Length: 482
Ligand code: NAP
Image (cartoon, rainbow, N blue to C red; front, top):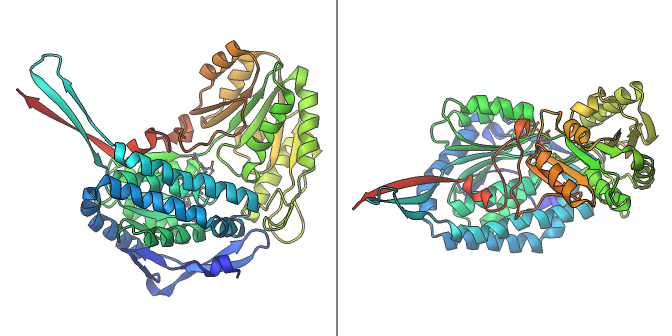
């Protein structure tokens, strides 16, 4: 155990109290850099989950009446305290998730910013007044919090995937039950401690950690006290949760998987494209829903782009994310390494050239080296599936419309990227890409002030931006006769 872990309360947080799971059950959290146990945390039962929802439901009415300024101030104080404790949060994330410390610090900045952004939005919730077309009635709209919300978050961004749901919910006046991924519960527990410290009233935020996500969450999704479910994770689990929520017609936000194209046109600044590719591919060890999954490069610049990318990726330092100089941490678990290895094997067997990397590490921990593949055929599995690892798969094209069509030929539609110096092309391609987000001449697209989200099998709903708070608000219309 290290200091960062010892400071975390590892119980359930329900109704403002920290308590053990029913029967004192615990689950073990591993460090992916060593494969060894890092901590144990409470392992909630379905009854614990129901207790958390009961606490959220009991707190809802008072919380909805709490002045927006007060709700905003809590978020603002939390933003400041997270920033003060950046080193603590960063170390926790590196320990439980694996990313290099510098990247964890980047996530602290990014994650905290959702609290600052929504602290400012809390006091801007408003409706409108208008005259009906017949001139006789007046139309008034007002906003109300949706109500108790279930939040399910993934392991890849343990802080930010939480704050971008919790921030707008607090700002809007919703109470919540948060269930972080079993691989990375420590960051969320530390965040709950911090929110308690800055004065979030009891019951507004409840956190359940469990090894039985399905068993604990399904009864809550079907419970009439729940009004909304917000989920970030895989499309397969998202589909299941949408089905479970159908009976109650819950409000839903679904932030699901991606298969991002990264297109480099012949008029691109190739060096800038390589810089962008390093971010779009290697941020978070490639374990990001926004990660570039398919590089589509014009034949005229393909050799130069591939050589430069392989040179940069091959020079990265793989190791424990806490060690100085390490730029690539471990993947989350052994299953993730096996999946990435199988995808690379399949692509190689179908004729791709492995330019660098390509073999998993054989020591302790779950390491896979940065890998560049060229000449990847369209039928390789990794062209269809999310790689979720440090593997860049390069294909070539000659025609702009063909590049757009190939970029769109996936069930997913989350992030996309392209590089060009031609303004008309910028507009044509931006309009042609069937994605929720398009990065032009930039390899990173996430921004708390922008609406993050996807189309097609990448889900629906937006997090961040002005849109983010709307997901937690209902619109009520009042008709006034004169
Ligand atoms: P996952 O397996 O779908 O898990 C996500 C969350 O759902 C975890 O908390 C998990 O808990 C929980 N879960 C799993 N099965 C469940 C069930 N039957 N009922 C209720 N909850 C359940 O995804 P992941 O592997 O953690 O995360 C990677 C995926 O997330 C990728 O597909 C990635 O693209 C996507 N992602 C999307 C976004 C976005 O904004 N669009 C952002 C980040 C990640 P346990 O793991 O503890 O069971």
